[in-house]
Amino acid sequence: MGNENWYDTDEPVMLSSLEHYDYCPRQCALIHREQTFDENIYTLRGRELHESLQEEPVEMVGDVRIERELPLWSEHLGLIGRADVVEFHDGVPFPIEYKYGPVRSGKHADLQLCGQALCLEEMSGRAVSRGAIYHFSSRRRREVNINTSLRQRTLAVIEAVRKLMNEPELPTPVNDRRCRNCSLSDSCLPAAIANTRKLALLQHALFVVDNVT
Image (cartoon, rainbow, N blue to C red; front, side):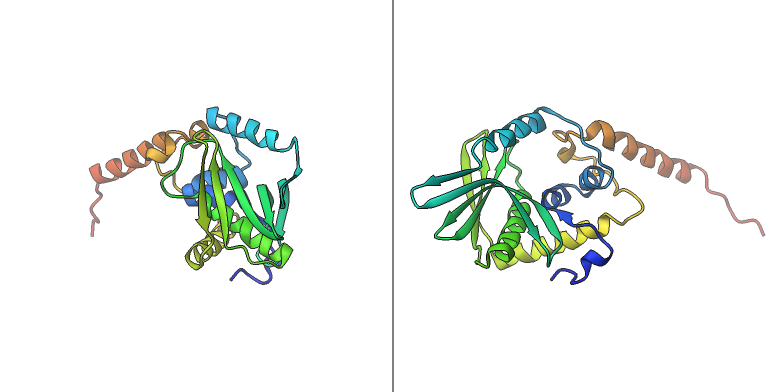
């Protein structure tokens, strides 16, 4: 469970930071701690997509109420953010997270969706057992079970993000395939930093000073 007294010393954790942290802790720190954000084709199109969701915030489709860009929060867990879309089926929330970019194999967005479910449970008093990720570019909607395993993973990441926000240094850059489509590559400089550290290790190996007695 989350820290009962998180509000004594910490700011709320943003729901979007859960996906960012699970994908790359350094990306999460740059965005949410250093307030660094650069645009690329995926972020620009994603922003346009989210702006389009604001045009009709509430809609009824049959017996289902649909709310868009719904503010969410959890006092217990110290979470805050928004849900792209929440369908209410007989009063039971069904959150839907919209993504524009390529589908990521790690299902990092599932944590953000689970965080939304945890907020909705606290706000509505109703159990949220399912949600969905909608990939706009492929028009695919993937349902996600908000099960015990995902909840535990999400709670662990909430605490990891909270700890990250108080760390004095940025996490080490990963410098792998995750960096290819990252909008923060120019700010993060993963290859340059990795090469600098590699060079430092090589220099250390070249010059070994013997202790003289």
